[in-house]
Amino acid sequence: MFSFTSNSSQRIVEAFVGEYASGKSEIAINRALELKDQGHKVTLVDLDTVEPFYTLRVISKQLWETGLNIISYNREDSFGLGETGAMLKPAARWALMNEGDVILDIGYGVHGARTLNLVEGAFESPELCIIAVINGTRPMTNSRARTREFLEELGRVDAVILNTHLGDQTTLDIIIEGNQFIREAAEELGVPIAYIAISEDFRGLIPADQWDLPVKYIKRYMPGAIW
Amino acid sequence: MPNVIGEPKKSFMTGNETAAWACLAAGAEIMFGYPITPQNEIMHYWTRLAPKYDKGFLQTEDELSAGFTVCGSVQSGKKAFTATAGPGNVLMQEPFGMAEAMRLPLLAIIQQRGGPSSGTVVYSQQEVTLTTFGGNGEGMRIVYSTASHQEIYDYIIKGFNTAWKYRFPVFILGDGYQAKMREPLEMYDPEDRGIEMVKPYPLIGLGGEIGKDREAEHLCNIYSLEEELYEVVMKVAAEYESIQDNLVEYSEKNCEDADVIILSHGVVSRAAEDAMNILRAQGIKAGYFRPITLRPYPQQQLRDAIAKSGAKVLLCAESAYGQLQRLTKQELYGETIKMESLFMPGVGIIDYDIVEKVKSVI
Image: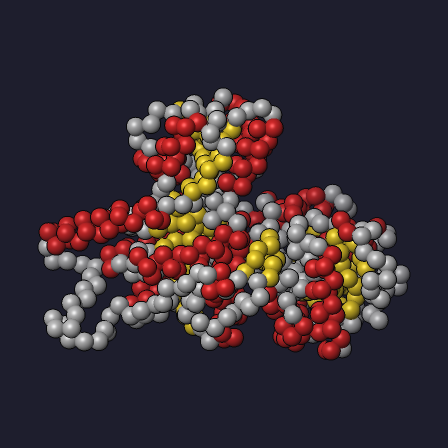
């Protein structure tokens, strides 16, 4: 089984890829905060090359206050950029030069790891781990066959996170059903499963023997970001 | 039509993706477009779907061309659409006017961004005037203002039918928030809900001999003489007015005893409904009125709501500097209810904003 090396001396570099609304940003924020709480120095990079004024921008101040180093556009440094703000923020290009762990939220992650060609040294990095976040309620990943097809199109994927949910309408049945076929697709392709991500609202509601996979309960930050 | 959705299933999506899927489910055959935020993912997603479902896409050199290619495509009998925003919507007014002139079943999805000019790429409700009455015509258009992903899906399916049934251009008026927000909705194949999709049909190149088998089909956007144009515009206006009652849609809540009616449209109406509930819980008799069609406007229904409630104040809340209010004023001519406003151009409005404003005006 795939496992994270949170206690290793080697630093952690993780890039989260996947569809819109798959939960990349949520997972990335939770992972960054988890590492910070373990005493790591963590940089969280909003690598949305298409729509840089969405995703983390609205909550970036709140995230700064947690002690994370955030690389994301904000109101002050986006003045006048308008549509041309779709260019890469220079600090994102050099994100791997930051000391400590680096978590990359690949907005518009449908191009998968290919987007990482914008980050200096990413592909040469022995630490880089590319993790696909899959939500089984997304139309392109709502069956075993579709998830498999999607994963194949993504290119390099080092691990998968099962993140089936339906926002505020999530039920246990939805979580179980979706994550089952994502798991089957990943196993067919031989891609390791990192863990199952579930909103902390479900803590205590899931039978302990439901899965033989690690489960991580995540806090939802993105509803505060409007989108 | 092939079944594209299959078993109805709840999905977690962005509004732009929803729009692309709705067009697919409605049987759209081709999209013409030019990139502009915040509608880009409609194009991106459509181009991902198109090869899988044997659909077409053409990225044109600009928005003028995107609009005109839709005008051409629908004449050949293809169910075509476009999507745009802001300055792109401005440029498309010329082809949208052609669609009014030639009675073309064009469908355009507008995801409003900030203005004037390039404004912001993010959000506003500042394309109300442009979308309802833009161009150099008389606003012979049908404009649905959506408030949720489910409505984006439902009204795109309905919008294609409206366009092909009545042959007036149809607009799905969303905004950057709806475009980018993620929320669940249920997608379905229209036929499974008993919705019969109007089959597209060619408007030109028809069979038979003119004068013998059929009348000549004049699709004209220019006339030689004033009187010719006059006759056409008067005929089109009469036809538009004759179908208004079939088209008007609105939502009204708690207006029976309201002292103040909160008027809003689109995504702001979600905040307005929450505000109404908060105010009611605090003992303030607030009502809610939302035009779903901005063209034609549910003017009689709003007049009736004002009359039956006896409300003293109509508070118009919008993410623009009075575009909905101006539209409303012209429709409510003669009413004496006091009009108050909460204008927040280019920014979102939340329940708190409306609650505070209501308390300050009653």
